[in-house]
Image (cartoon, rainbow, N blue to C red; front, side, top):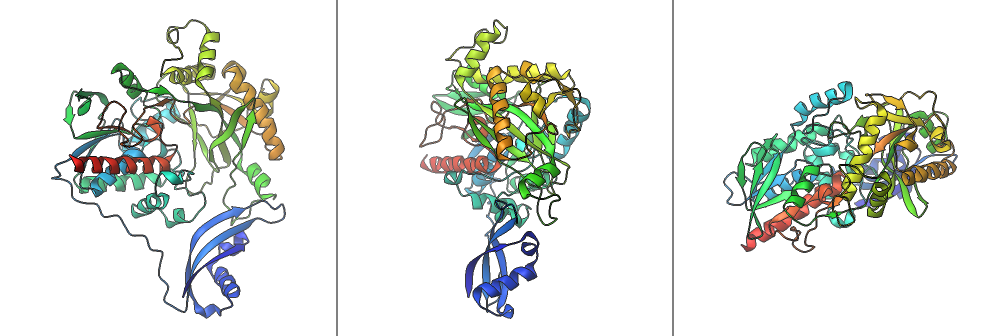
Length: 535
């Protein structure tokens, strides 16, 4: 017999299969010998009680019959080396990679154009970024094999369950080497140290099946004829024809947005969020969340999620990284962007999170009107689809100047930030290029600074101990999502003006993380396969 059972155990009990078996037998009224095995369907932490942290488990149990390991059927990928249909995939992030895998599954040859480098070569550019402040515009935390997620954490949690099959995406990741705990943990996470191996395995499978993977191949133009895509033009002058093209270039590929505007193809300004990254000692977050002096060794480093309405505007935590590191995520010299990541063990002594404020088109227009004439922003107006992009870029440039160059980040202690006091010194920080004591209200737009001030004080009331000068506020977290949307037909998923050009993933404004981007990539590839069959 097989059955499903829920248990509520202490962290130590939930970490011991022998103890779990004992509780299963007691709950089912069976002898322990009758329990032939079990595996976890779901696992989550319940830290609401101030007296005890609990682990909620949902188990699949085998009773008086042979135990069978968790079943997930690997996806079969065809040989497409001689396929008649070819589709260009621009970008090798999660949207592009999963689109390519789905195309192969459907018998179509993908040709992946990636402006950056493979995961191994990319590491050298990240080292130069962290140690020397040198930004390679084509190879950084945002650009390169695997996209922005490869070296910024590999978080797999998403609420986008209606956009596709989350379990399918997780299973495919397991097929390429991810650990099976991502299938049952409530907030699955791979870790920056492990994700590159998985990305490499996916690339090797694509090539093995006859797909083409072209690195340092930047799209600079594409040829259209009769409102249809004909071929892609790359920076080195190559013209690559295909039956269709998927634009999966991520939220930071500004040149793609400029290209669409130049070709008079529809794009629009999209609201996004901008703010700072906040870092606490991880031990402090553990104490707050787990109500303890020292974290139980059976518990992972604690995380948090916070949201508040301030001045009719949302302020919320974003991409929280327990046991993590703040990283420089700029994609162009003279700009400063910070992001966060964690290794698989989440064993660094700091906890960091983005803390961001909603930004609308009206905010950008107001900002530029107050700023006055500027060579880059004089012509920004309400009908400019790149207005929010220019706003984002302007803040990043201001932060670079405030930090003094070489990607040093302007920073302030949290209470000082809220009370508008100078920080005479700063706490230790994981950000390798270094932080510079600054008055952040001279860097951030007034509405952002004011919302963050009020929001952080409110968060301190929700999480006793969160509001402290032990925490440091680092500017700026600005790449939360794309500030531009590339519209597509809701039925065909193709661009509103080009019938075989498919905007996809975060850069087009249709995803917000690894899983949602992967699902969107699959969805677009499935639609392309159906449309090609009709031709």
